Length: 301
Ligand code: CP
Ligand code: NVA
Image (cartoon, rainbow, N blue to C red):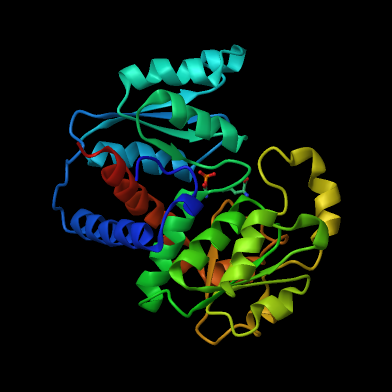
């Protein structure tokens, strides 16, 4: 593994190795065992979109590993004034040891990897959110013991989260059922891969998707960059909500995950959020451990 650009580039074994390392790093962190294996290294963190979890977990994560993080808002970089990504990449590659980038276009992340010559980690694009799904898989494994054979359902927009969940579930042998309106389907190539694996089902019915699910997952109806479409989307996604009725279809003991931030009263009710807060905030914590595992895997010299 040279980069983490999308989960589809990884094998099931790669994912398993990252999750095992993440568990180890979490154990060490909880027990005060230092693990400064990236001492002296610098991670550049380019943000073209807002972030709470990704920024703070990467910045503290690289620090705990003995390195330092540089927060680079694209508004303050020359990228914001039109310097091409391939030039920026060739410059940053000479200063830094790794780059995390959150932006719109997946092709910008791919170009950064192509031209920088150092490990690049995708911290979310319109297409996917691999770091989030690694933390999600870590959380599910931690609570349920294993991944293979479990059923996860995703309720809502066929967005970056849905795309990465398909790629992750298929590689870990999990059944995945997605409920979305027909005009908001996930990426068609991933849908095809999911269908070919026999693990994916796609439906317009949230209740059908939730049937006997072990894990119930949802995300906002309007992602970053889609703020202007929010009213239209609220109409399209009416009924695509994780609420008590939907939870009654899932297996008893089913867990709820949300990448956050959540819009209570839209994709999830306050009641379900609060009832499942333990899992949801463990999931948020696991961003730290899973991303530290990614950085160690890619950057350890
Ligand atoms: N889930 C997630 O990526 O959160 P942030 O947008 O706060 O980074
Ligand atoms: N789909 C959301 C995920 C946020 C973590 C977005 O892209 O805004």
